[in-house]
Length: 81
Image (cartoon, rainbow, N blue to C red; front, side, top):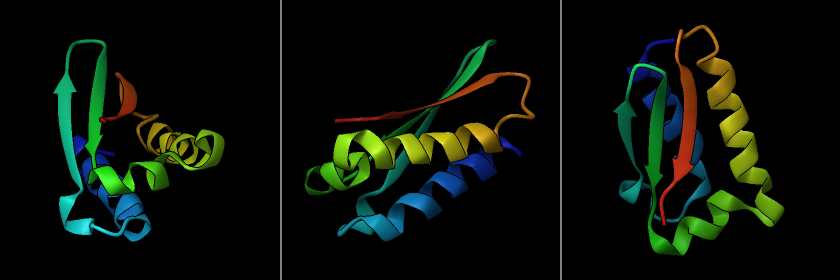
């Protein structure tokens, strides 16, 4: 799955979970070993994305990691404060 598709996947997973879907943004940082996606949401929605005991964040990361498994680089997702 290409980087663009991974960004679209993250947005499509997150937008239905938040109250402010227009504030969802994904930024990409890439180096030779990894691709880091940084997710930014409205402050009011941060708790919804993290979920109880981090379960929602862990589930989103699992899907993104699985989708990027065919990449030669390690794929990571960080949730910005």
